Length: 183
Image (tube, rainbow, N blue to C red; front, side, top):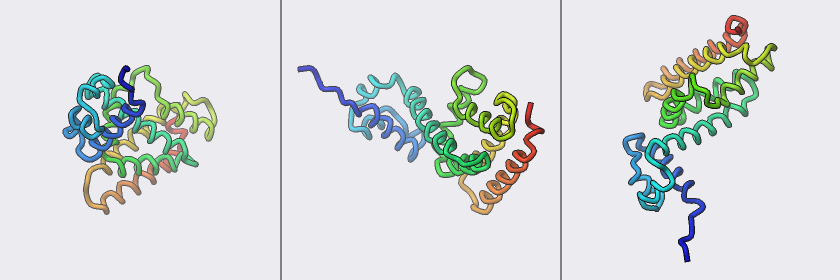
């Protein structure tokens, strides 16, 4: 009788990798540690994922989907900004992996659901076509990423509060004056 395939194995491997990434970062994420945490063997992990980069890619896709779900549920563009930096602050390790994966997407032809969703939201609210807001997207993205990066660094709560407050204020002013960012 052939061996029975474990239908949940890939999910267990990714869950183990996510836990290791969250607690130990990249240095603690080895295929051997993932196998041990998932209750399987290293060769079995290799059968599902070619290498560590393949696991990191799958993790980043999972984190991106979770972030997008959080953002897409926002009631307003302004709420998107608050949710974005909150996600980064609450998930600093995951945010770092997301940023690494975004660097391979920016400037490529790969799908960018967050980008498309955001420019569509701007067009819906302010008129015009979504493409009119490409520059606005990058202005908000770069501002949000800078803020999120600062908030992922452990430090004084007062400094974090100041960074967060200023980001939300500045992004609100930019939304009110969106015409300066519209192509």
